[in-house]
Length: 556
Image 1 (cartoon, rainbow, N blue to C red):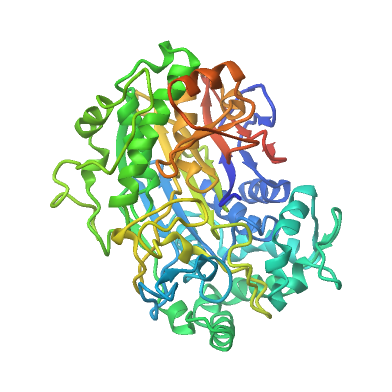
Image 2: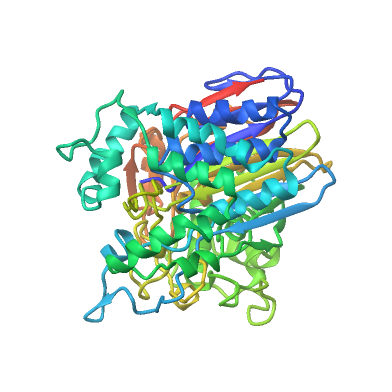
């Protein structure tokens, strides 16, 4: 169950790199989980757009052709490093409706996760469109209508669905059937998923996109779309209102800046936990010679660092406008103290969170898609977008075509109760009106030791977004591997609770045996997440698509 689909865009003078789905070019490159989105991003660059234009176009197009993962019914985080060296973080995360209450998902005193994951009560106020519009208005070169045009065509004329989407539809058909708008789009007259090869036409979504193109974001937030959704919610037991849409606003955040092996990293701050914990995990493992370790020891060390960081995540992380999130979580000195707890011979029990320095006073100010971009002018972009689990709340309100998110499940609906991804949380992430739920999204931009842009990356896959980003950075920086080999390496993930080391089945049995000897409880899975990376690769520039999906890397 992926929360993200990832795309990557780079525009510069590039030379060949080799590997699956690698692309080289003279002016631009894009790598996404869907060819239509890749082509749309390339086309807007050809028409004079920059990296910001390419990334936003790809995101809006993915909302049509990759509807299980993202769309304007969800949210996003946008990280931009401009050619002048300034870095901007645009928070388009969903917010809890004004009528939200901490106990709204309790039935007879017990949490009912079905209410927070499916149907009218599961959705927060969408923020993706507001963030995209701000990004292109402030930093892009082309009008918003031009960014919407490829999505309008794909929705109006249709696109052929593939085997992967059919599998997702099949797994989610029971819930999609419950809602008239969703059933009309994704299922046939008998309530069964459309077969592979079906031309999927989304007329209502095309009309919504066209309305936004003609009238701007107010068509969505203060016009017919908000009014239609608000009316449906009132009739179906929801609390999301047209006023919630009208009152939505993005947040401009201060990026997290950290270092790893003399590289500078820019990450996204809370309400993302990604930037904090990517930095924290890397700070911990920087105390070890990862490149000099054999594979099982390296995995053990990184997994233990993940475990320690996710224990902190469960306690400390939440929306900084509502709770105190310690900046000390990303402090290298704190990380060194955590590193000293790691036993190279065995997996340690982690009973609870740690206490970062100045935790009371030094605090942050008050299935998903990742796409990255850069251009010849020197602009770099990393965006992660989501509607949360596959097809979000499973609700398309009739007449809108928009799949609504189920981000309310990313709150801690009751202390100790896991969400759809097995994550638990406490009061820092409880439901409150206007609050942004905690996210694992980790858009990241990396500079080399000389201060030149090196990588733009992120990932898809719920809490594994954090671990994927960490593993990809270690692969490139410590192990000196090319981008395509980095994406192909077996992945692993530990999130503290449950106390299980999840690994991809492609990891050799000999390595798994040594990890079991150290006391790790192993859960083997077919695949962990989806990543895309663009950037500098062995002195050359390029982009590559994750081999776990049928994505596309295109050159221009």
